[in-house]
Image (cartoon, rainbow, N blue to C red):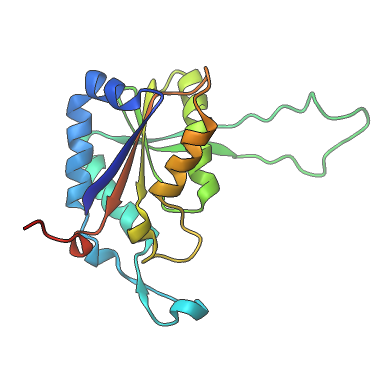
Length: 197
């Protein structure tokens, strides 16, 4: 894969480069270390792409783990203790959910990283909510969101979100005083990238 695009949200790029230049380098190496062709393993059952071989999010995520976990990155799960004090008087739930958690794909020192290859709402949640929660819990101070660009998303199942859409919304939303500095990185498959003459 190659790094195809980047967007600095809430001064994310300069904060990452200032605090974590070595970890940013490891992430760049991880992106280029992911072999896209090895991840084209999902046979489409969608009408518009029936039988086409698509990029598998699970295979891409697996390769990112293989690149980063041996270098000291770790996945972090935080248990959710849901409050019951807000139920209305007399309400008793049939079953309280146990074992709920929030998870960050990768953390090293105080840099949190999410590789998002799913629906659009997850990208927004990661940056606008999850990273703030993990910062408030003391686990991170800065984030990086790694997402496909549109050209790569077109080779995945329908509904996968992409860098260009995500950045448009973040620009229109603006920055809030609770937002974490986040660097958004868009990646693509090398085989589609035209050579420069």
